[in-house]
Amino acid sequence: MTSPPLAVLHAEAAPALDLLTVPQVMARLQLSRSAVYDLLRSGQLASITLGRARRIPTHALTDFIRTRLEQEAA
Image (cartoon, rainbow, N blue to C red; front, side):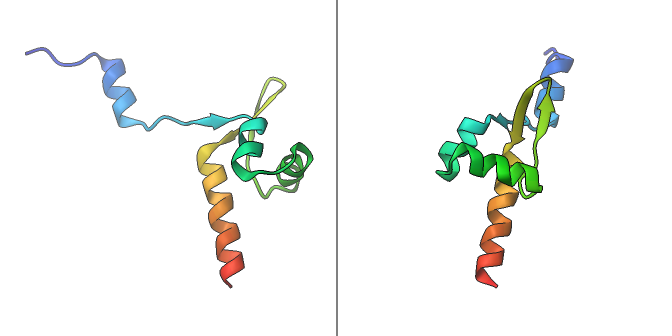
């Protein structure tokens, strides 16, 4: 039996980093474009810039929601 290619092993070892667009975040949070950009500008929601494109990692959106839920509960 042969072993799987190295690329397959690497893909299984490291979880995929899903990136969302601003419109996708708008839809998930049901917020306006300006509200999402306000969250990005204030640092409440983390993002990366790829060229001129802004992308939000899914874990950053999850962290933002978790933080807001904790703030509401306190």
